[in-house]
Length: 207
Image (cartoon, rainbow, N blue to C red; front, side):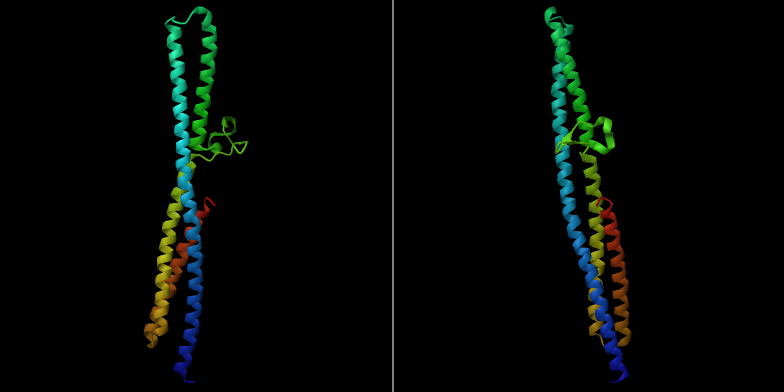
């Protein structure tokens, strides 16, 4: 076997192995992009549900505040008979407690149990207090996962282009040109791998 043939054979083996490694990196990157893409959709849905829950509690609070204001006006205008004032006062106190509870519930729904502190836990999920993930927390998670998704896309771009460069280097005969394309494959593949690691790190912040 001539030196030229031996060099060509060695190059093909090296290039093939490099292509295989970079293809594996691309597969891992696509796996993460798919998983965290699904997580982003879930986070957006949970955020929407949490804000709907927050608004529903706000409507209930407004209704109770309206009742309380009406009773207060009736008491102050002396429309209610004196013998009923004590009962109306008790009812107002109950309504005030309901308003305070709704305020706490809305804050916990908005910020999450961890943010409001154990002394302000009022909502239960699956029969447990302190497990509510707030709308703002879901919003932050969706935003972070969206940024990670963009980074995954950049990684995919570089990795796909690097595979093309590698395929071109395999079919070229000139040593100089195939080495150039091989070098481009390695550089682009390395860049894509770095972006993939960054994407996993971004997504893993909420993992």
